[in-house]
Length: 386
Image 1 (cartoon, rainbow, N blue to C red):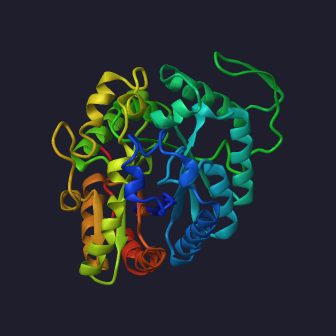
Image 2: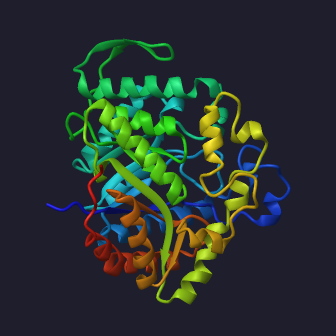
């Protein structure tokens, strides 16, 4: 039986009312950008529009919806991935619900295990539980030392898995989490637990960790060449661990939007650049503080989107390397087919709303994805990993 790629829709749920002249006053679009610019009534309207997109993604025939978590971010209004996933579980009937992911070093692991189990019960086993370390900003805003992030992540992961797989009550004594009694009542539908995804952009340590646990690794949109290198790291590590990986162990994320014509898509797709220059701008201690990641990971992150000291990639540059894919259905099918054939990913996560893109344009994109693009991608036979 041939393996086919599963296509997921993702929206960053941006707060699109932030203006360029407001952002220019501050050194960062994250920790130093005041929340006085936030209007709850405008957010209410936006949230409901994003929820309408979820409904359409399900009805149009996409395979899944991905959601995530960020903090102190005008370009992502989701400080709780679990609340968003719970909404998705009740708005949709068929799609798989991928959380990519919960930032577990900054959250209570036992509560996390309970909430995820609730979502799996709500959705009757449609949950994919992605765990992430979170960006440096998330660690800093939580008041946690960046040097503790990875160790906290691994200990929280171990406790969550234990909550799902070991009958309670039991005791847990870790370096960061100590619980005399752990006895979560709500357990997930999927046994031994929901599938787990682990993402990364450029860090080889993330790839190795995912492979050692036999979790699916999701690359968050690095250039194809670097992604192919990281995929090889996964395959080599899997062989050392003693299992044979395949497409279901690997996924790739890309910004993508479909319109009725190439010309219209080109104009709409410029909205993807809305937050680009502010998202990672700021003092180095906000973006890559000492101790947050290894020296190798820091060096490789410069290659993620063609960095390394040169000017930032232009809109056309990003399209030339398929980091941003916009066009008519025929154009998008051609470009995404090229990506799928080069990477053979079991999962393709399409960021369809990440910036100042009109809700109506996202809805039309979802219609065209469902009717033309996704069926064409399903026809591609994925290559086994060697």
